[in-house]
Length: 387
Image (cartoon, rainbow, N blue to C red; front, side, top):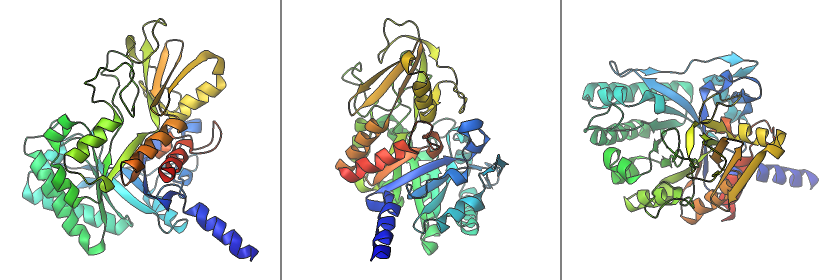
Protein backbone atom coordinates (compact mmCIF):
# COMPACT_ATOMS: atom_id res chain seq x y z
CA UNK A 1 0.00 0.00 0.00
CA UNK A 2 2.86 2.37 0.82
CA UNK A 3 4.46 1.63 -2.54
CA UNK A 4 1.22 2.47 -4.33
CA UNK A 5 0.87 5.72 -2.39
CA UNK A 6 4.42 6.81 -3.22
CA UNK A 7 3.81 6.01 -6.90
CA UNK A 8 0.60 8.03 -6.91
CA UNK A 9 2.31 11.02 -5.35
CA UNK A 10 5.14 10.88 -7.86
CA UNK A 11 2.71 10.61 -10.76
CA UNK A 12 0.81 13.68 -9.55
CA UNK A 13 4.04 15.66 -9.20
CA UNK A 14 5.24 14.57 -12.62
CA UNK A 15 2.02 15.69 -14.28
CA UNK A 16 1.91 19.15 -12.65
CA UNK A 17 2.43 21.00 -15.91
CA UNK A 18 0.03 18.85 -17.90
CA UNK A 19 -2.85 19.09 -15.43
CA UNK A 20 -4.45 21.84 -17.47
CA UNK A 21 -3.20 23.54 -20.62
CA UNK A 22 0.13 23.55 -22.40
CA UNK A 23 3.30 25.04 -20.92
CA UNK A 24 5.54 26.01 -23.83
CA UNK A 25 9.17 26.73 -22.94
CA UNK A 26 11.31 28.38 -25.59
CA UNK A 27 15.00 27.58 -25.24
CA UNK A 28 17.72 29.80 -26.71
CA UNK A 29 20.55 27.51 -27.78
CA UNK A 30 23.08 30.30 -27.10
CA UNK A 31 22.33 30.23 -23.36
CA UNK A 32 25.19 27.82 -22.67
CA UNK A 33 27.58 30.52 -23.92
CA UNK A 34 26.75 32.74 -20.94
CA UNK A 35 29.14 32.99 -18.03
CA UNK A 36 28.94 31.82 -14.45
CA UNK A 37 25.47 31.45 -12.95
CA UNK A 38 23.91 32.46 -16.27
CA UNK A 39 25.12 29.42 -18.21
CA UNK A 40 22.16 27.21 -19.12
CA UNK A 41 22.33 23.84 -20.86
CA UNK A 42 19.98 21.04 -21.74
CA UNK A 43 20.71 19.46 -18.35
CA UNK A 44 19.05 22.48 -16.66
CA UNK A 45 15.74 21.92 -18.45
CA UNK A 46 12.65 21.45 -16.19
CA UNK A 47 11.17 18.37 -17.84
CA UNK A 48 8.51 18.10 -15.11
CA UNK A 49 7.20 21.63 -15.77
CA UNK A 50 7.24 22.23 -19.52
CA UNK A 51 4.85 20.27 -21.75
CA UNK A 52 6.58 21.61 -24.88
CA UNK A 53 10.20 22.69 -25.34
CA UNK A 54 11.01 24.78 -28.42
CA UNK A 55 14.62 24.61 -29.59
CA UNK A 56 15.49 28.02 -31.04
CA UNK A 57 16.40 28.78 -33.85
CA UNK A 58 16.84 27.21 -37.26
CA UNK A 59 17.75 29.80 -39.90
CA UNK A 60 17.04 29.87 -43.65
CA UNK A 61 19.08 29.96 -46.82
CA UNK A 62 17.13 32.39 -48.97
CA UNK A 63 18.73 31.17 -52.19
CA UNK A 64 18.26 27.41 -51.88
CA UNK A 65 15.42 26.89 -49.41
CA UNK A 66 17.89 25.15 -47.14
CA UNK A 67 18.03 25.37 -43.37
CA UNK A 68 20.91 26.22 -41.06
CA UNK A 69 20.99 24.50 -37.68
CA UNK A 70 22.45 26.12 -34.53
CA UNK A 71 26.02 25.26 -33.66
CA UNK A 72 26.20 22.52 -31.05
CA UNK A 73 28.59 23.27 -28.22
CA UNK A 74 29.44 22.15 -24.70
CA UNK A 75 30.74 24.65 -22.13
CA UNK A 76 31.59 23.77 -18.54
CA UNK A 77 29.77 20.50 -19.06
CA UNK A 78 26.58 22.16 -20.30
CA UNK A 79 25.46 21.12 -23.77
CA UNK A 80 22.96 22.53 -26.25
CA UNK A 81 23.09 19.44 -28.49
CA UNK A 82 19.93 18.20 -30.19
CA UNK A 83 20.58 14.59 -29.19
CA UNK A 84 20.82 15.59 -25.52
CA UNK A 85 17.60 17.56 -25.83
CA UNK A 86 15.67 14.72 -27.46
CA UNK A 87 16.98 12.37 -24.77
CA UNK A 88 14.95 14.35 -22.21
CA UNK A 89 11.94 12.33 -23.35
CA UNK A 90 13.42 9.47 -21.34
CA UNK A 91 12.58 11.52 -18.23
CA UNK A 92 9.11 12.49 -19.43
CA UNK A 93 7.55 10.42 -22.20
CA UNK A 94 4.77 13.00 -22.67
CA UNK A 95 7.20 15.85 -23.37
CA UNK A 96 6.95 17.39 -26.83
CA UNK A 97 10.18 18.82 -28.24
CA UNK A 98 9.86 21.17 -31.19
CA UNK A 99 12.22 23.28 -33.23
CA UNK A 100 11.64 26.94 -34.13
CA UNK A 101 12.44 28.46 -37.51
CA UNK A 102 13.34 32.14 -37.70
CA UNK A 103 13.50 34.50 -34.73
CA UNK A 104 14.07 38.24 -34.50
CA UNK A 105 17.58 38.22 -35.92
CA UNK A 106 16.48 36.29 -39.01
CA UNK A 107 14.03 39.01 -40.03
CA UNK A 108 12.10 38.65 -43.29
CA UNK A 109 14.52 38.80 -46.21
CA UNK A 110 15.20 35.05 -46.46
CA UNK A 111 11.64 34.09 -45.59
CA UNK A 112 10.28 36.38 -48.28
CA UNK A 113 12.65 35.05 -50.94
CA UNK A 114 11.68 31.45 -50.19
CA UNK A 115 7.94 31.51 -49.54
CA UNK A 116 7.20 33.67 -52.58
CA UNK A 117 8.89 31.12 -54.86
CA UNK A 118 6.84 27.93 -55.26
CA UNK A 119 9.89 25.77 -55.92
CA UNK A 120 11.95 27.12 -53.02
CA UNK A 121 8.96 26.95 -50.68
CA UNK A 122 8.48 23.26 -51.54
CA UNK A 123 12.19 22.64 -50.89
CA UNK A 124 11.98 24.36 -47.52
CA UNK A 125 8.95 22.30 -46.52
CA UNK A 126 10.80 19.12 -47.52
CA UNK A 127 13.98 20.17 -45.72
CA UNK A 128 12.08 20.98 -42.54
CA UNK A 129 10.21 17.69 -42.60
CA UNK A 130 13.44 15.75 -43.07
CA UNK A 131 15.22 17.65 -40.29
CA UNK A 132 12.40 17.09 -37.83
CA UNK A 133 11.99 13.45 -38.81
CA UNK A 134 15.68 12.56 -38.72
CA UNK A 135 16.40 14.26 -35.38
CA UNK A 136 13.36 13.07 -33.42
CA UNK A 137 11.53 16.37 -32.98
CA UNK A 138 7.75 16.47 -32.55
CA UNK A 139 7.06 19.46 -34.77
CA UNK A 140 7.90 22.96 -35.92
CA UNK A 141 7.28 26.45 -34.60
CA UNK A 142 7.22 29.01 -37.42
CA UNK A 143 8.70 32.16 -35.93
CA UNK A 144 8.75 34.61 -38.83
CA UNK A 145 9.19 38.11 -37.43
CA UNK A 146 7.23 39.32 -39.37
CA UNK A 147 5.56 38.62 -42.75
CA UNK A 148 5.30 41.79 -44.82
CA UNK A 149 7.64 43.67 -42.49
CA UNK A 150 11.35 44.10 -41.75
CA UNK A 151 12.46 43.53 -45.34
CA UNK A 152 9.38 41.58 -46.39
CA UNK A 153 6.92 42.00 -49.26
CA UNK A 154 3.21 42.74 -49.57
CA UNK A 155 2.64 39.16 -50.74
CA UNK A 156 4.13 37.65 -47.56
CA UNK A 157 0.80 37.59 -45.74
CA UNK A 158 -0.75 35.35 -48.40
CA UNK A 159 2.35 33.22 -48.94
CA UNK A 160 2.82 32.63 -45.21
CA UNK A 161 -0.56 30.91 -45.25
CA UNK A 162 0.50 28.83 -48.26
CA UNK A 163 3.69 27.84 -46.42
CA UNK A 164 1.77 26.75 -43.33
CA UNK A 165 -0.79 24.84 -45.39
CA UNK A 166 1.95 22.90 -47.17
CA UNK A 167 3.74 22.18 -43.90
CA UNK A 168 0.50 20.94 -42.35
CA UNK A 169 -0.04 18.59 -45.28
CA UNK A 170 3.53 17.29 -45.12
CA UNK A 171 3.37 16.80 -41.35
CA UNK A 172 0.08 14.90 -41.44
CA UNK A 173 1.72 11.55 -42.18
CA UNK A 174 3.37 11.50 -38.75
CA UNK A 175 1.10 13.96 -36.93
CA UNK A 176 3.90 16.43 -36.34
CA UNK A 177 2.82 19.58 -34.55
CA UNK A 178 2.75 22.96 -36.26
CA UNK A 179 2.68 26.19 -34.26
CA UNK A 180 3.69 29.80 -34.81
CA UNK A 181 4.91 32.67 -32.65
CA UNK A 182 3.10 35.86 -33.64
CA UNK A 183 3.05 39.60 -33.03
CA UNK A 184 0.04 40.85 -31.13
CA UNK A 185 -1.24 44.28 -32.21
CA UNK A 186 -3.93 44.99 -34.78
CA UNK A 187 -1.43 46.88 -36.94
CA UNK A 188 0.77 43.78 -37.07
CA UNK A 189 -2.19 41.56 -37.92
CA UNK A 190 -3.17 43.89 -40.76
CA UNK A 191 0.31 43.63 -42.26
CA UNK A 192 1.23 40.03 -41.48
CA UNK A 193 -1.55 37.60 -40.65
CA UNK A 194 -4.74 36.16 -42.05
CA UNK A 195 -5.92 35.04 -38.63
CA UNK A 196 -8.75 32.73 -39.70
CA UNK A 197 -6.45 30.79 -42.03
CA UNK A 198 -3.65 30.58 -39.47
CA UNK A 199 -6.24 29.31 -37.05
CA UNK A 200 -7.09 26.53 -39.50
CA UNK A 201 -3.57 25.24 -40.04
CA UNK A 202 -1.86 25.80 -36.68
CA UNK A 203 -2.17 23.56 -33.62
CA UNK A 204 -1.32 26.49 -31.37
CA UNK A 205 -0.69 30.20 -31.86
CA UNK A 206 1.93 31.49 -29.44
CA UNK A 207 1.17 35.13 -28.65
CA UNK A 208 4.35 37.13 -28.06
CA UNK A 209 2.79 39.29 -25.35
CA UNK A 210 5.96 41.06 -24.29
CA UNK A 211 8.29 43.78 -25.59
CA UNK A 212 5.53 46.35 -25.36
CA UNK A 213 8.20 48.80 -24.27
CA UNK A 214 11.92 49.00 -24.88
CA UNK A 215 14.87 50.82 -26.38
CA UNK A 216 12.67 52.62 -28.93
CA UNK A 217 10.78 54.47 -26.17
CA UNK A 218 11.45 57.93 -24.77
CA UNK A 219 10.11 57.11 -21.30
CA UNK A 220 10.02 54.16 -18.91
CA UNK A 221 7.59 51.34 -19.61
CA UNK A 222 7.21 47.80 -18.29
CA UNK A 223 7.90 44.83 -20.52
CA UNK A 224 4.40 43.32 -20.54
CA UNK A 225 1.58 44.94 -18.55
CA UNK A 226 -1.51 42.76 -18.27
CA UNK A 227 -3.69 45.84 -18.41
CA UNK A 228 -2.81 49.42 -19.32
CA UNK A 229 -0.15 51.03 -17.17
CA UNK A 230 -1.54 53.54 -14.69
CA UNK A 231 0.20 56.31 -16.65
CA UNK A 232 -1.10 55.20 -20.08
CA UNK A 233 -3.80 57.15 -21.86
CA UNK A 234 -7.16 55.58 -22.67
CA UNK A 235 -6.17 54.76 -26.24
CA UNK A 236 -3.17 52.61 -25.33
CA UNK A 237 -3.10 49.17 -26.96
CA UNK A 238 0.21 48.14 -25.41
CA UNK A 239 -1.00 45.53 -22.94
CA UNK A 240 -1.73 41.82 -22.84
CA UNK A 241 -5.49 42.09 -22.41
CA UNK A 242 -5.87 44.20 -25.53
CA UNK A 243 -3.65 41.83 -27.55
CA UNK A 244 -5.56 38.70 -26.57
CA UNK A 245 -8.88 40.29 -27.46
CA UNK A 246 -7.51 41.52 -30.79
CA UNK A 247 -6.56 38.00 -31.81
CA UNK A 248 -9.90 36.57 -30.70
CA UNK A 249 -11.83 39.36 -32.43
CA UNK A 250 -9.93 38.66 -35.64
CA UNK A 251 -11.04 35.04 -35.68
CA UNK A 252 -8.64 32.99 -33.56
CA UNK A 253 -10.06 30.18 -31.46
CA UNK A 254 -9.23 30.99 -27.82
CA UNK A 255 -8.28 27.36 -27.19
CA UNK A 256 -5.56 27.62 -29.84
CA UNK A 257 -4.05 30.76 -28.35
CA UNK A 258 -1.14 30.37 -25.94
CA UNK A 259 -0.29 33.38 -23.78
CA UNK A 260 3.35 34.41 -23.98
CA UNK A 261 5.04 35.41 -20.73
CA UNK A 262 8.39 37.19 -20.52
CA UNK A 263 10.93 35.90 -18.02
CA UNK A 264 12.86 39.15 -18.29
CA UNK A 265 12.42 42.90 -17.80
CA UNK A 266 13.12 45.97 -19.89
CA UNK A 267 15.57 48.44 -18.36
CA UNK A 268 16.11 52.17 -18.69
CA UNK A 269 18.31 54.89 -17.23
CA UNK A 270 16.25 57.55 -15.48
CA UNK A 271 16.98 61.21 -16.11
CA UNK A 272 16.51 62.00 -12.42
CA UNK A 273 14.89 60.58 -9.29
CA UNK A 274 12.00 63.06 -9.13
CA UNK A 275 9.90 60.64 -11.22
CA UNK A 276 10.53 56.90 -11.01
CA UNK A 277 7.14 55.63 -12.20
CA UNK A 278 6.14 54.35 -15.63
CA UNK A 279 6.26 57.11 -18.21
CA UNK A 280 9.22 58.75 -16.47
CA UNK A 281 11.88 60.63 -18.47
CA UNK A 282 14.94 58.61 -19.49
CA UNK A 283 18.35 59.20 -20.98
CA UNK A 284 18.52 55.76 -22.60
CA UNK A 285 18.37 52.05 -21.83
CA UNK A 286 19.82 50.45 -18.74
CA UNK A 287 23.32 48.97 -18.65
CA UNK A 288 23.77 45.31 -19.53
CA UNK A 289 23.50 42.73 -16.78
CA UNK A 290 26.27 40.38 -15.63
CA UNK A 291 25.00 37.23 -17.37
CA UNK A 292 22.73 37.98 -20.33
CA UNK A 293 24.96 40.98 -21.11
CA UNK A 294 22.38 42.83 -23.22
CA UNK A 295 21.79 46.54 -22.67
CA UNK A 296 18.13 47.31 -22.00
CA UNK A 297 17.30 43.77 -20.85
CA UNK A 298 17.62 41.97 -17.51
CA UNK A 299 16.71 38.31 -17.07
CA UNK A 300 14.49 37.54 -14.11
CA UNK A 301 17.41 35.90 -12.30
CA UNK A 302 19.55 39.01 -12.81
CA UNK A 303 16.77 41.14 -11.36
CA UNK A 304 16.06 38.97 -8.33
CA UNK A 305 19.73 38.34 -7.56
CA UNK A 306 20.56 42.05 -7.52
CA UNK A 307 17.49 42.84 -5.43
CA UNK A 308 18.42 40.08 -3.00
CA UNK A 309 22.06 41.15 -2.70
CA UNK A 310 21.38 44.90 -2.56
CA UNK A 311 17.92 45.05 -1.03
CA UNK A 312 18.44 48.41 0.72
CA UNK A 313 19.26 50.10 -2.59
CA UNK A 314 16.08 49.08 -4.42
CA UNK A 315 12.67 50.72 -4.49
CA UNK A 316 10.06 48.24 -5.77
CA UNK A 317 6.47 48.98 -6.77
CA UNK A 318 3.98 46.25 -7.65
CA UNK A 319 0.69 47.14 -9.33
CA UNK A 320 -1.31 44.21 -8.03
CA UNK A 321 -2.15 41.62 -10.66
CA UNK A 322 -0.61 43.69 -13.43
CA UNK A 323 3.12 44.51 -13.40
CA UNK A 324 6.14 45.45 -11.33
CA UNK A 325 8.67 48.24 -11.71
CA UNK A 326 11.70 49.05 -9.60
CA UNK A 327 14.74 51.27 -9.53
CA UNK A 328 18.18 51.26 -7.96
CA UNK A 329 19.28 54.87 -8.18
CA UNK A 330 18.86 55.77 -11.90
CA UNK A 331 18.68 52.15 -13.07
CA UNK A 332 15.02 51.26 -13.76
CA UNK A 333 13.40 47.95 -14.71
CA UNK A 334 9.80 46.98 -15.56
CA UNK A 335 9.07 43.25 -15.28
CA UNK A 336 6.95 40.41 -13.91
CA UNK A 337 7.44 38.57 -10.64
CA UNK A 338 5.77 35.28 -9.61
CA UNK A 339 2.68 37.13 -8.40
CA UNK A 340 2.03 38.97 -11.66
CA UNK A 341 2.88 35.89 -13.73
CA UNK A 342 0.31 33.95 -11.73
CA UNK A 343 -2.29 36.65 -12.40
CA UNK A 344 -1.56 36.52 -16.14
CA UNK A 345 -1.89 32.75 -16.21
CA UNK A 346 -5.18 32.95 -14.33
CA UNK A 347 -6.30 35.49 -16.92
CA UNK A 348 -5.30 33.08 -19.72
CA UNK A 349 -7.40 30.30 -18.21
CA UNK A 350 -10.37 32.62 -17.62
CA UNK A 351 -10.22 33.71 -21.27
CA UNK A 352 -10.28 30.08 -22.39
CA UNK A 353 -6.75 30.12 -23.80
CA UNK A 354 -4.94 26.86 -24.46
CA UNK A 355 -2.08 27.50 -22.07
CA UNK A 356 0.98 29.62 -21.38
CA UNK A 357 4.35 30.11 -23.03
CA UNK A 358 7.68 31.43 -21.76
CA UNK A 359 10.37 33.40 -23.48
CA UNK A 360 12.52 31.92 -22.30
CA UNK A 361 13.13 28.99 -19.99
CA UNK A 362 16.79 30.01 -19.64
CA UNK A 363 15.84 33.48 -18.33
CA UNK A 364 13.87 32.29 -15.31
CA UNK A 365 15.75 31.67 -12.04
CA UNK A 366 16.71 28.18 -13.20
CA UNK A 367 19.39 27.52 -10.59
CA UNK A 368 17.53 28.92 -7.58
CA UNK A 369 19.75 31.98 -7.04
CA UNK A 370 16.87 33.64 -5.18
CA UNK A 371 15.17 30.59 -3.68
CA UNK A 372 13.31 27.79 -5.44
CA UNK A 373 14.13 26.97 -9.05
CA UNK A 374 11.93 28.24 -11.89
CA UNK A 375 9.67 30.48 -9.79
CA UNK A 376 8.02 32.11 -12.82
CA UNK A 377 7.20 28.89 -14.61
CA UNK A 378 5.84 27.35 -11.42
CA UNK A 379 3.78 30.46 -10.68
CA UNK A 380 2.28 30.37 -14.17
CA UNK A 381 1.32 26.71 -13.87
CA UNK A 382 -0.22 27.31 -10.45
CA UNK A 383 -2.16 30.30 -11.73
CA UNK A 384 -3.50 28.58 -14.83
CA UNK A 385 -4.53 25.49 -12.93
CA UNK A 386 -6.21 27.46 -10.12
CA UNK A 387 -8.46 29.66 -12.27
